[in-house]
Amino acid sequence: MSDILVKALGYNSSARIYAVTTTDAVNLIGDRLSYFPSALDALGRVMSMGAMMGGTLKGDETVTIRIDGNGQIGRIVVDANASGEIRGYAENPHCHFEYNDFRLNAKATIGDKGMITVIKDLKLKEPFIGYTPIINGEIAEDFAYYYSVSEQVPTAISLGVLVDTEGRAVVSGGFMIQLLPNTPEEIAIEIENKIKSMPSISEMLSSGFSPVDIINNLAKDAQILSETNIEFKCNCSKDKFARGILSLGSKEIKDIIDEDHQANTTCHFCGSEYHFSEEELTNLYNDAKKAGK
Image (tube, rainbow, N blue to C red; front, side, top):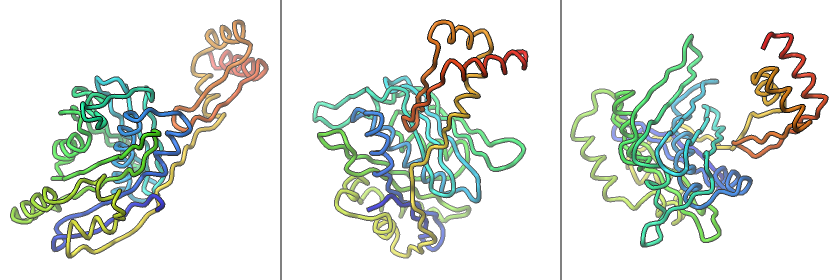
């Protein structure tokens, strides 16, 4: 089953519902950059969150999620857009923590303190930037808190990744329910009770549930609005890395030329490598000098 995001209305059109799978995208990154199981689990959860946040956008709007926790994984960054394109990386993909029963310990991986930053480019003069603290390291709860505090939208979120013994994601996905304004309290209670009675998102996905199945399980009166393919897509390029080298300034570029005579760069998101010869570095050095850097 290919990765897909499904959007719907439910509960007498009082709630927006999103359900997503990101298994292929997560494994693509994990395979390219050799993620350990706990790191893959954490990144997969945030990528599913990013895909659903992307689903709330329109046109060429974009969203960037940044998680800075006190866990061993370091910073996690995910970019997404309204077209279903996502990418993500973790600062330390080689960390791994388990509970005594061998379940992956996301809280130890991410940490229980830190900040979540959400940057939405809505094609206005300035981007929307929201901040909330990490409340416990359980990513779904942390993002539900973000929506409640930063965007004032009552939201229930479930995220899950099931990693096999070879370190690959068997399933990765999630769902999100957001209450629309003036939703009666009894509907909020009904949704809360429904979610409590359901299996976990990982159990449903590993049992063969599709995002549509999950939505229909959440709301008997669900109206499917759209289905969008989710695809890992990185927009890195040699030109972008060249601009990054240029920003170092002429002195640092000269040091690289004198010491290494070349430079090799790697994209954190997709693992693509870009080589800069001594001649290319010299051109960048000259450009930096001309610009007074």
